[in-house]
Length: 497
Image 1 (spheres, rainbow, N blue to C red):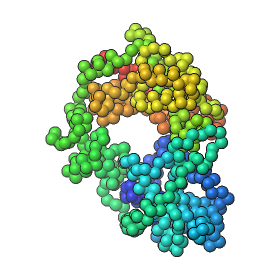
Image 2 (cartoon, rainbow, N blue to C red):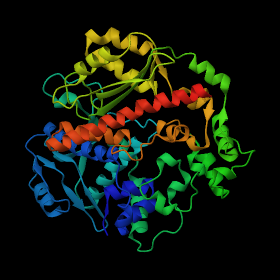
Image 3 (cartoon, rainbow, N blue to C red):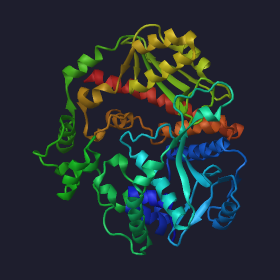
Image 4 (spheres, rainbow, N blue to C red):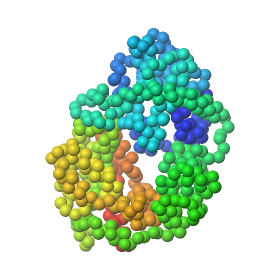
């Protein structure tokens, strides 16, 4: 076995997950990537190829194991090499770009990432980037190929497209040589440990590393390795710190129903645990009434669907800035009236902003509350549309001034309604089935936002036939329609309480 850079990074995140990927790929691939995850991979590949334009006329090593061609290109000092492949007895790696530095008579290395930041931000990504490059440096050193500077090429989050994309403005190049050199010895140790662990034919026993992580951080094969976790594990306690989770796991407490009364938790975490253990709904009627009084008729229940294109697709957009392509709108004009519904979806080639704003202005009531789920998102989209379309800036500001967030009663410090089936989440995907069982996303062709986003991207990219495009477009309409209908029904439940 030769340990690849990708599998090494997987190992650092979860050792057993990496072992299963190598030795039992049928189990690893049993849990398919989500549309969101696949989009990340596709975006990465797109950005990687685009970044080659920074260093033109390079030679590409097409095969992922063609070390022979790579060494020939190195020997003749090929000026630019894309995707060169290097291997030792134990390790194999592909680099993104090597550029011959004639002044220093050495190759400089460039790693391309479809990211707008090299800062950690609590995600550990910076460390991954540096370890990624350190892995390459160690392999190259072992085969006698010395590297000069080691650089990260990433997207510039401040870049705004105007006409043809300017690569030198779209990308930022950061020299990480010092940071990489500082972790080389530790990375060498980690690589040897990873190689020994992953070379074994004997499957690691017991849980994977994710047993000590919150539910949202679990690896691809967590369900396989942690099959004995209960339906509602302690890992689902909202925002639980790793120290607290480790304390529970080390005490063999896996079920949320077994968390002791005297175990120290935050106020919201304790409420979640108490609600789960009692099986009773927590209702603060006074708090609910206070919230409902902030909503004024006519009430417009509004939801957006967007696509975060890594490469700015239209003028006025930054990398990963959300493209609003669809909205659904349910309107309740008075306590006695039935709801009205309007929608908008754009699947053309140009930027949807102006048509989106026109349709919203046409159908949205001039007064009353605009009810959304997670106001930070919709208000942010409105602000960005106003920035790109000055003629609609005042309108978008007026809309934002009327926004009420329906998620507030179900989340954080403002929580006044909790249900055992929420499982600590304020997501509408958890709240809806608990409060309005007859409505469900389960039988929908599109069931979550990542799939909706990916579907629209495939429509406008021309991947579907005319008939399939119509089917997919209708599926998007159905999904977004349910989002706003769900808000109407949840609001009615609050009123009934």
